[in-house]
Image (cartoon, rainbow, N blue to C red; front, side, top):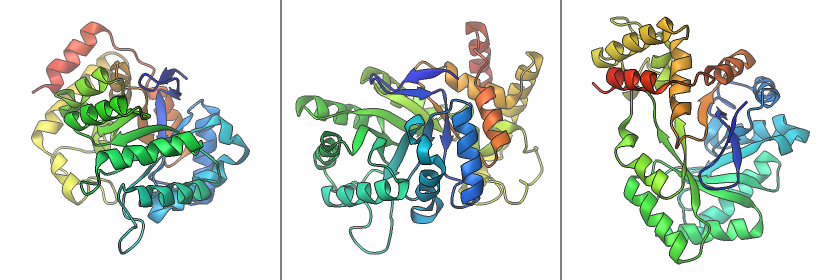
Length: 311
């Protein structure tokens, strides 16, 4: 397994990470433990959590129990700010809420520190300085090691980096955004901002909801139970995406690889990407994900992929 520094920090994470969104929902405690154990055995150390996963904390509970005595092998990244109950003071990024949310996550995870604590959804009602000062206090207290965020725009990355620098606060070292071969919109401003201010990118939905696995077919309805079967993501099953997927599949096959391997390896080839977060529902899927990121595309191959995807 390859390891990379997350942004300009000293924190090293595996180039393939384990997304925990299936735990507590699709997977019970035993199945979660099997997946987590396999990930650690393969050298995957980054486990990407959120307090809202699995139904308000269930995923964190399962992962904490699954890690047990192997806690020291894992880099736990969890998130806060989404609703964890009804009524006020149960979501957001205020100092009051952050101080409660971190204690709840620590208890559920069965640990006394969180490696990477991330804003899940930006709270427009709370000033950024209040949020960052509260998070800085958690780092000082030793309850949190590093800070990150998800879904920030480029100007927000710049604003918070400048705030941390001028106010002498611990900065964010990572950003999570949707990034894959079918959605490269972050390349316009978010990736340049991340590179300029020293943040590592942790791309989520690397397989575009499964489209980049090849399991969906043009002109056919998505299989029942799949991510694209219903809801707002169903619109991804369009001719433009199928044209790209088919061309990418042929490109990979010509070089002795699968579409899945291309999707992971292309992301891993991007300099700003520290770890590709991928969910898994079985130990076999964890192994497949770990092996998928080993292809290092040449400059010529990257140019060919650009030509296919930038249509």
